[in-house]
Image 1: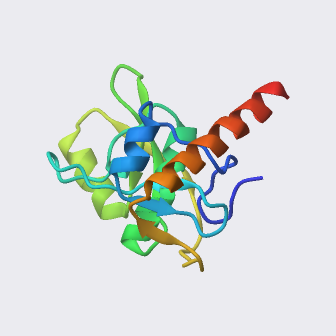
Image 2: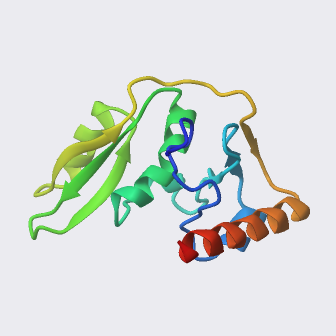
Length: 153
């Protein structure tokens, strides 16, 4: 069952290949419900958050949706974006205005909403912070243990 706060079915999932580096060096949204860490760091070069970038799949986009909701203090939406060659990607948009700006700049792309929540809610226990080294190690240990349990099923 998906976490009501961060929408993930796995409380220790991180899609980033360099999970240790991200957890150690980037600002994290720590889910107050399940404890999952989500990178909420802003990219210095582009001035964008991770949730602003396109994703290869809906499940990956869902892993970052809560950070968009939190930063915008409103429910954001995931759209399936299809280019003129039929290639699909998934993008999170904060509102219809951002979606329309994107479509104006990206002629030949079409979008349809595929996921959103109906209302924004704050959750008790949520933290935005850099993790201490011990927290990073514990999280990675739990992530590895969780992965072993689910891969054995």
